[in-house]
Amino acid sequence: MPDMRDVAQAILSGAPAEDIAALPIPESYRAAVILRDEADMFAGLPSEEKDPRKSLHVQEVATPELAPDEAYVAVMASAINFNTVWTSIFEPLPTFGFLDRLGKESRWGARHALPYHVVGSDGAGVVLRVGDAVRNWKPGDRVTIHCNHVDDQDPSAHNDSMLASNQRIWGFETNFGGLADLTVVKANQLMPKPAHLSWEESACNALCNSTSYRMLVSAHAAPMKQGDTVLVWGATGGLGGYAVQYVLNGGGTPVGVVSSADKVALLNEMGCEAVIDRKSEGFRFWKDEHTQDEGEWRRLGKRVRELVGTDPDIVFEHPGRQTFGASVFVAARGGTIVTCAATSGFMIEYDNRHLWMKLKRIVSSHFANYAEAWEANSLVAKGRIQPILSAVYPLTEVGEAAFQVHHNLHEGKLGVLCLASQEGLGIDDPAFREQVGEDKITLFRRHGAA
Ligand code: NAP
Image (tube, rainbow, N blue to C red):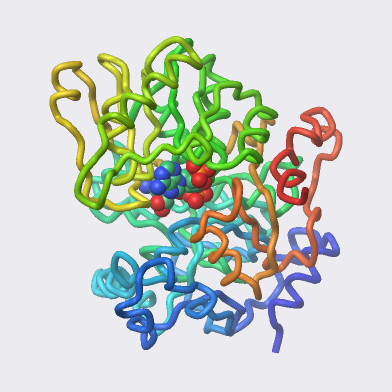
């Protein structure tokens, strides 16, 4: 019986597309999962003690049947996203509820409601098979995968698919995610792999890069103008590392907030000169669990003015409860707070007087539609946006990788090798890589290794 090792060997030895198309699809594959019967394993523990190393398992799972609008992709590499941390600590809710709801929708949806959840919302690999309704992709295509899972037969999906009533995040609200040797995706999640990047450099971008693109570039959220000042929280994190690049590319001035001297140095190397080290400068926006410290908001605002001479036109928000009051306060008159998350808590408190009296806006954003993800991917392929990969783990150590992200011990993105046997494989256009510059492409990786 063929297994995924045969598939890996064919890909790694450069087999032509017709040979890839002829490969039998193995009946099972290796995947990172959480288990339904362990969903209560961390009951009563504080978040910090919920340990992804205990809940994430790597095991064989059955290959699901392929729907007509889907593709099997051999995953060469994937990456950790914060949503895998949420899934693995069963917060704010166990994700099996999402799978069960999808399971009730259709015969194809029913495949997803299983005793295990294959996690992961990023990936790069090779198309092995496509369903009968797939027109634009074929076996052998080298692809990256974005995570917007939409049934495009629903009319609500056709203005902006992020507004679709059946919009889901692949590998978070669906099963068969990317932290595995094989994945099942809708054909409208596929995008061309950037030819100058390795598998792991290609796999780490789509989720965070597309999200930051929608937040700061697309008309759907807070499109930045040339000359705008943008305060970026977590500026060397997954979202922030792309956000800073978009601000610099678009002729804006980023003010990056980070929490270590190392991260300050990394931002400076990226070309972000205005940086606030929130840890060494001792910013603390809550006096206690119930009371915010307006003095600290003012101190932050003053610090931004000292650095760049103005208030931020846009605040790039995702930490949530810990920072949101400060974000609303420091935004310029008429400025925008664009938010896509709430890592430190989703019950938000801010002083509404500062919002309305200064005509500020809060704009929500969530991942990206196919067009936005495609544009963000094209910018990576053109060498205009660099991967922010800082470290790479084998799939067997996926729990440790998620632990690092959970505890904010990482920079940028953590890659995960699935079928790729080592780092650095999959570069199809070394001449273009040289043109873009090894130093730029591997900036976070060199920093992570230092
Ligand atoms: P990440 O790689 O962990 O980066 C987040 C950064 O935020 C950290 O590097 C940290 O930087 C900063 N941070 C964390 N806690 C903070 C706090 N209490 N106060 C100030 N800064 C804090 O995560 P990510 O991939 O950027 O994702 C961030 C959040 O966005 C997560 O909750 C994730 O689930 C969510 N997200 C949402 C979407 C969407 O489509 N809606 C997409 C991607 C991510 P410093 O310690 O250096 O300051």
